[in-house]
Image (cartoon, rainbow, N blue to C red; front, top):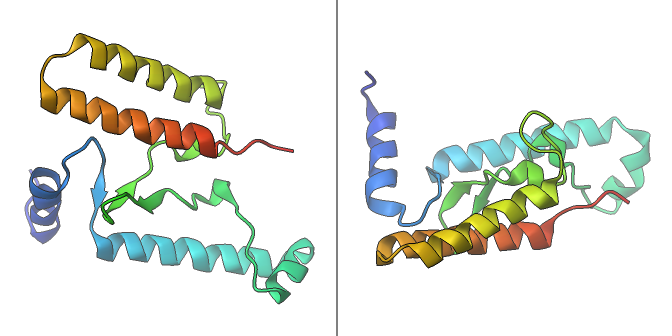
Length: 145
């Protein structure tokens, strides 16, 4: 068993703050993760000559494999874990799915099925949230050029 302030905070986030199917992250932890990713990315980019012009223009390239975007803010301003980060950035996970687009579309289709087959408003609402979340990730899908 686990005890302590972190477990208490996690329980509070889950039971009182998270209404929809998402993994809410404490803002202190989320901001630390985002800062760490940003700092690590800057250190890597600063050493790579192909990015020097971007740094000079105060631009930073998107590097999804560094898990940038794995923590994001939802529409309510809460920090959440983006569990579709890898498929959204077209990073295939061969042991789980081969096509990122098809993987997200499968979840979308599943949401429609569950919305049609359920009668409880709270459950339907959760599937609508997941449906909108997946549709947004499908629109954001990063394709390699």
